[in-house]
Amino acid sequence: MPTKQARQTVLFELQLPGDTLPHANDSLYLAGDFNGWHTADTNFIFKRNRKGIYILKTKLLVGDHAFKVVRGNWQTVETDNEGGAIANRTLEVEKQPGRNVMQVGLKVEGWADNFPKAPIRSTAADNVKIVDSAFEMPELQRKRRIWIYLPEDYAQMPERHYPVLYMQDGQNVFDEATAFSQEWGVDEYLNSLPKSQQCIVVAIDNGENERMQEYNPFNNKQFGKAQGKAYAAFLAKTLKPYIDSHYRTKPDARHTAVCGSSMGGLISYYIALTYPDIFGRAGIFSPSFWIAPEIYQSTDKALTGNSLDHSGFYFYGGAKEGDSLEQRLDQMTLLLKSHPSIVTKTVVDPQGVHEEKYWRQAFGPFYQWLRSLEGQ
Image 1 (tube, one colour):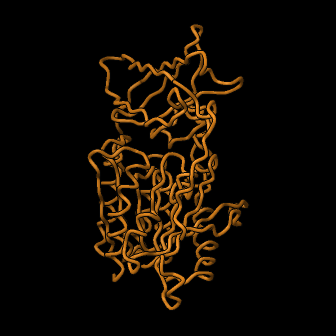
Image 2: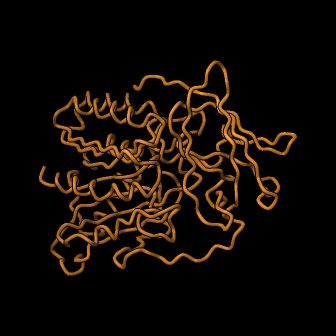
């Protein structure tokens, strides 16, 4: 496992102009790469002092971090003074001399829910459809919207079968109208390729406030009881059999991949680790391995059992993401490379930060790598 890193005490001081004061009973939180972008993490809640300043004192790993101020969900995230989306705040945490506290001043200009939301035109391509807006998830006893991208020649080539890519955080995969920050543009990218190079893509919406639990396979004292094992079973035992029976797929593991970013990257890796005979390829973008140190032991166990033979793992990370991401990726790929039959590739973007813009840019190279393995 990665070695323990130095932490620094940081004091955030948040000032709010009068017209941006939170609503009664609202709480203010930090959501960032240090807590899986959890929007209601009680370990990162602000408290108001006698001067009316909201303060948060916490310890962060030394290094770069990205975050935003929220009031409990992404519908109430901070904005600019006209209600427009803002880039992630960034902070370089440096070790202070002695026991000095690093002080950081913040100012919120506005909240997303304080502005009329202009309707956003759907950007999903015509060959993106909704499988079901309330698909049953018996393993989790809930329902979820499922999207599907069908190659442009799907209707014209009834004899052809296609590889399938399963993606997490489905709201962000195809459509700007449903995306939290920015869509990945997977449909536009695939439609730009020759039809012979396109595949089926199935995207599963996240559970919003349930996302942290659904995408974590291990119980966590801070974030609660894990639901990731049940979520992984849903993909393997319910969703994939349904897709294979209703669409012309290539159902074998070497033509079936799973992909996601952040917490979605963690659960995608776990799915490929747990069901390698079903999902033989995985795209792991900026995975939140920090929240689940048990993932290394699970990898060791899978390697001991030789269950990952001929699996393929593509790791992407941004050098400016912080949270020891590069070190964690190096540690994981080092484990996997101990078995020469496992194919791995790791890409680190020197300018990359933890957001959809960079994952969108990284999708094309991942997809080309995925295609290069089709014969293996």
